[in-house]
Length: 115
Length: 115
Image (cartoon, rainbow over all chains, first blue to last red):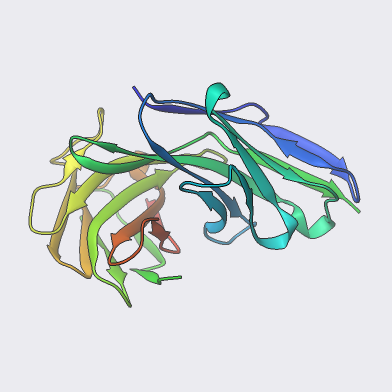
């Protein structure tokens, strides 16, 4: 069965620190990969996505992610976090099954950035 | 990106009543709509996938008779929580995919509280 694993449930960083959030998935077929962010009290927003091509994907707000097919990973990175990056981050994997497309989410990583 | 709306944003109801939540794609035709449930401080759990004009496909453990999904048009899907109980209290999020878009777009969510 398809699954998505996020390694860290809670991360606390100081401003200007570098961020890397891990995401691994299990699915043998073709996948599309996403990172979403959910700020407190708000709904999901797309940070970045990978469909094909360059495995290093750049998204909004200085975030990037690298798809490593051999490791089934799609880790999210940001060189220097800001207090406003405090939010919950979700990795998601979309695959095509017999019933059509389906997106599964990881458990989420709650990031707190100290000012 | 495309816009998905949900109505209502919040609903409080008595135990035993039924509640209907609407999900609309505002500027594209949603051939597929998804319903998720998010528990406090938890990730999104896919409940069901519906393709326009056909019956919804429910995930394992989701009661079909409890959570009725209708996707009668390319811009509207409804989720009806029948005979709601306090344990059904949660945040319900819909998303839609279709048109020229490969990704899913998420609605703002509906917070259901059952007293």
